[in-house]
Image 1 (cartoon, helix red, strand yellow):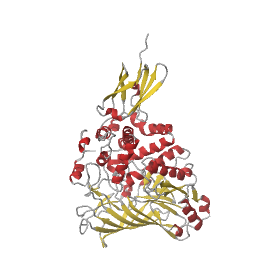
Image 2 (image 1 turned 180 degrees about the horizontal axis):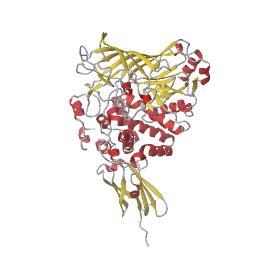
Image 3 (image 1 turned 60 degrees about the horizontal axis):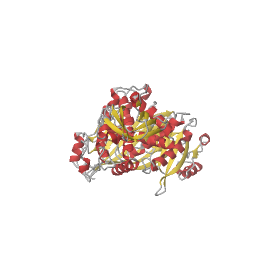
Image 4 (image 1 turned 30 degrees about the vertical axis):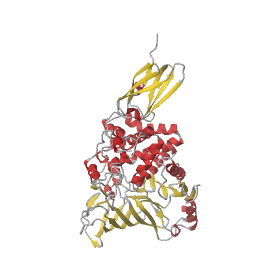
Amino acid sequence: MSFASQAQDPPLYMPREVQQAYKNKTRWHRGTPTAFYWQNKARYNIEITAAPPSRTIQGKQEIVYFNNSPAPIQYPTFRLLLNIHKPGAARSGNKRASYLTSGVHVDSFSVNGASQTWPDPDGFVLQRVKLPQPVKPGDSVRFSFNWHYDVSVSSNREGMIDSTTFFLAYFYPRIAVNDDISGWDRSTFDDQHEFYSDFNDYTVTVKVPANFIVWGTGSLQQPETLLQPAIVNRYKQSLTSDVVIPVVTKADWQAQRVTTQNAVNAWQFTASNIPDMAFGISDHYVWEAASTIVDDATGRRASVQAAYHDTAKDFPHMARWTQHTLHTLSRNWPGIPYPYEKMTAFQGYADMEYPMMINDETCDSDTTMTKLIAWHEIAHTYMPFYMGINETRYGFMDEGWATTFEYLIGHAENPAVADSLFKMIRVAPMVQDPSAQFEVPVITPGISLTGYALTANQYTKAALAYLAAKDMMGDARFKKSLHRYMQAWNGKHPIPWDFFKLFIAPDMRSIDWFWNNWLFSFHHMDIAVKSLVKGPKGYTLTVDNVGGFAIPFDVQVVYSDGSKDSFHQTPAIWRGNERQATVGLNTNKSIVSLKLDGGIFMDSNEADNIWKAPVRK
């Protein structure tokens, strides 16, 4: 592959800050990081104390922050995400009074052991701190905090599930990302847009009273000091079991034979090179677990766990569904072995992903929907956790992929059901609404969008673009390109322009024209039959692309003898002219009707997708 072969398409729009990164040689124009690429990192040691039904969480922590950038750091930015609950915070949408709290209270703060005043106790999410001395490149700085906050009664991504069941996430002061593109991430958090985090090392200790279990990100240390012997044995057995094991049942809770009976038990979890930690605590959730081999080459297993209220009708299937999902993601799409040691599905309200955890709402008897949501949230393991995506700006780089994998898992299980659900939930709301908000280019920074425009770009249009590229490139080359991208940027911060350059068409040309069509345009999905002309070797079909998107489609033909045929067209048909294409239908039979069918690429006006031969009188 040469640069000349990639230069045939007009260049993609590139923001000035991205151009500067390439000039600084931190990223290569072929889509990979260079030897000059840098990324900062921190080591978090956090201890929190929770004692439901009290909603107050006490915390103390130490952060050792390593400056790997080429410039000294004088004013680091911290993010206190739970200040989104404070009255007056800039939030997306209205919130009930039960959502509001007084936020995170920083009780003490020090830099390298020297006490320092927290700059703005009445502030919100972003806090800019002035250091006594700048942190030189290659050096580190140690921050120490004591803090507390009240868990929100109104639970979503985090908060109170019930009076003695909490989901704890985004609870600790964290250092914002400082990257080679935009510098310090000072984008606000409005509770709609998502996150951008560095890859850090964590040790988190959660102190709770006896008879509470803590489920969380990372490796649970010394479970035998926390759980009674029979429970420990079941838990350890589950780590190598293909069969789901009831680790803790309702009867175990009623008999108080679950945890050791210390006044306080300290549940410690450790994890390395991950972007975040999250925890669920309860004194009555049942616990089921099993495992599955996620790496055939090494035989490595991952634990699958489910924690839920015993009244849920769908969650009793969750451990088995999680097991199947990890197995499928590791082998099929994306086809990269699940990278972590476990995945826990916790019953809450968020339908949200965290490293090694999902917090999903029960759909009761609607097991199809519960399973689909679990597929989506677990698929997020790869983007944004395996790949350090800036979800705030480029949510299509993670939500789009999770939506794609969600569809592919379902399609492998039942194609008809997967197609129907994808069209109904993902595509139809966008296609059937002619509002301009659905035609905003996907590349638009997510932080500039809200509502349906944001959802359509990040989920539906991005997933359709990836699936269209898969159709055009073929599974083998598409997967090879995907793996090239994931291997190059695992544990790093890719941007869209890195991704674009790592996908190469079967003829070894770039597909920048395709990304420009799908991600940089104001298009929608609408194709139409223009004409059908019979010739000596068959027919020539001319198709107008009214909407502009380079979609795949089938030409479904009915012949005069009653037989049928289908001719598949990949998006490559639009390369030369995104507004019109011709299709040669080589047949000796007479066509009496045909239909253009895009499948999940739903057409906004199906009336002009049909051609019928004139009726002879």
